[in-house]
Length: 235
Image (tube, helix red, strand yellow):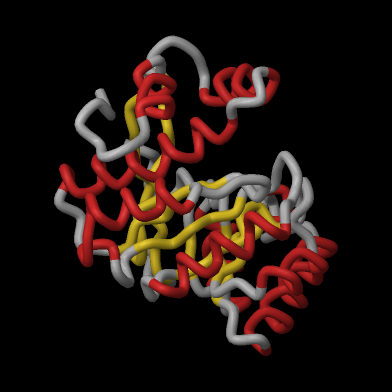
């Protein structure tokens, strides 16, 4: 269980965080050999409901900011407790970012340990706030960390969003990956994505790889990184 009471945060956000009952699991993102871990994605797991239900609940209550803060502080605590050395990938709402005092507290608490070790994954929902994204991007670049666009091809994350965010990494949604070994339309789409993103110096991740045939085909296309049940489940 992740606890927040000891963190150097404002009493109001601490009170809100105390209401959360969550753990974190991690799913590896592999390099093209399917064995070498590039990063560990932190995934929130509430103890009393699904993560989708939690997000819906907090969205209706206009409290997504609480989940944003909880994810950063909670995921990093869990990451260091596990002793991982590779990067950690943390989900972030494109509509939100930590306030300056929260970002300062984050840096104060974790220090230089986070420099160059984080990937911030901008989710595909609920909406994009340029103001909050620019603040987030500034913090990410200041600490030599990476920016990622999650679930490309679903929600709000499309070519226009990639152009705005100028990320280091784009994660292709499972909808583009499932059955790619035998669906020609998906083959052409992903092939073009790889060419376009590589021309911009962007790494491409295939999400939701569940079959060996999918993995082998994607390797042949030159996809850089891989995530999915075929390689490893969250644990």
